[in-house]
Length: 327
Image (cartoon, rainbow, N blue to C red; front, side, top):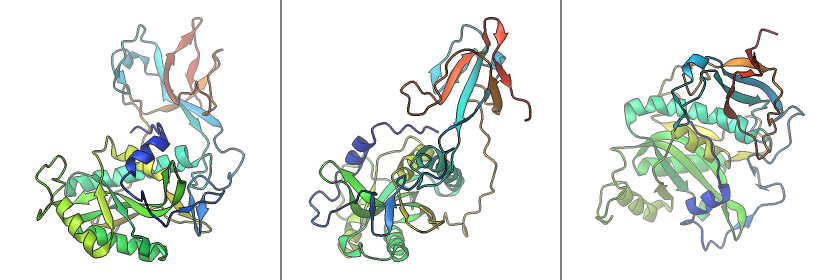
């Protein structure tokens, strides 16, 4: 699963270019990136001094398996068999409000959970689609629970039978930057699948999703749009989580909630401990100690920082990457 954020501002402008261009109800955010009870994730207080600091190395020293396979879909023909795979691990409080930990701590953890649950759903309901349900201006002042129920009804009416809702209270563009405009991102399943991608027949009288959503818009005012094909479920979930919204003052506010045939009552998923494995040989990662002389960038803000890398097992004839003993 890839968590490459790229140019967030550009992606957001492209993603929402069809929505709210001329809305007279745009409400800019305050200096805390909040509006009313809601706040953009990552704009709270730092939980403690350890947040984001380097914790440990994890990796794989099975060097005999690392000379002919691939890492991140790139062909690695290693000149020596003595190469190790290394991953840097940092401390995280895993809180969505923390400006240090929200993106590479909390959002990664939640994305992994979403990916695992939707993977089970795919066995029963087909392909996961990425959908946006935009709230009409008349409903902007509704209580969150009521707003969520209306959004779920709008999804059901259009044939979206279940999935996960990720709440976004804000949108972004160059004119207003972040502004109040509540909507829900959905990773879920469409009854009969989404057959409209690439269709050139038009939507008048069509019984497909695009025809249904246009007819329902005339009734309820909700703009429900299927976005482009995803690269990965986990990567899409992670990206949407890292600019989602939380309710200030609520200790366990759930940014991502499940509905329909993917609800906890209807879809039973056996919880499994997700193992961290080497992407080259697929063996489980172990904690490593480094005894070499090289300066390895550990600060995630450094332009030279890489979370994962392949390195020589030996320096000057001695092994410098060693499996850690119990402390």
